[in-house]
Image (cartoon, rainbow over all chains, first blue to last red; front, side, top):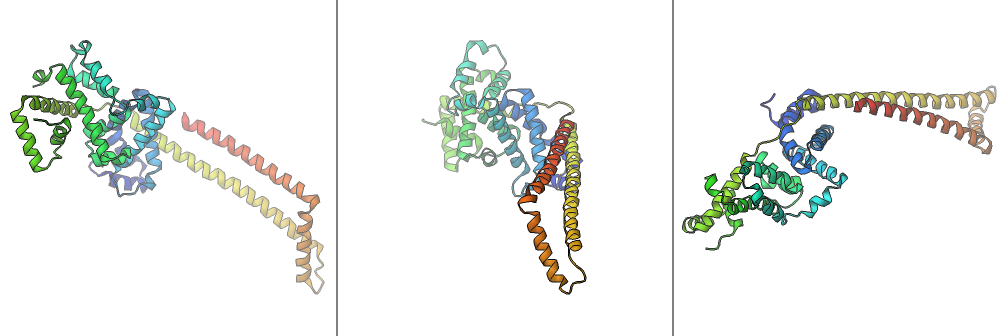
Length: 188
Length: 167
């Protein structure tokens, strides 16, 4: 069963084999949890929202048109549910205030002396966890789920160019920190 | 040599045309500053690729399956409940219709030659009496009462089912 494609599993679930849905859950739970945790900045909320997402996806499997990938459809549910959660806990305002152009606060924070002694991988993790919701979602989908810019643009309902901008800004942020802290030799 | 970070990023993503690739490669080779920026970007990309995913709680999948099964059971219960309520209402309507016909038949004279005409007249009269000023309020009250009682039981049932689903 684990070798089957998403589409084959969904067809089986739609035929009434509810237990097969666990394969889909196992396949997506950790990556989508990572995305939600980075977006919501809270582990408990992330797990609660993820549960909600899997229930929503199950209840709406009948409306899934097999034209797009299941992952794109599922991540759209995850992203939109996370946004709803963010707006309900009033964090969305805070998140939206940090536009894609406004990552300087992270750069100056993590370039400072306070963080010089820390491991770079630790800093990268910290930075990713502090990124605005949309940036965190793009980074996770691109690097962890290995989705293309086109697929991400469908999930987020933004242009491919915008996805590219978000992606490059996040990469540039890390690049600036590496250069400012003279870490290139250390890495190489 | 002026090469933007955007161009370097596109180079890393493999989104450039052949002549642009050549230009960027030459710039990296010739300029230490461009090379430094390029290497830092490659390192950033590499670090982001190495980020590992987080793990949900161990029994997460089982919990999702249990929730789905509970929801399925709940949907079945709701269907059964609706069937019972609708059957009950159906029986009431059938009873009322039967009662009307019984009244009409008992009022009419079967020995008459114009039975069909009389029947239709009587049915017309009976309905105008039933929905006349006197009876309409009684009829409405009975129906409202039935609907209120059904709604109350439906609400209680939903509340109970929701509690079962949550716990």
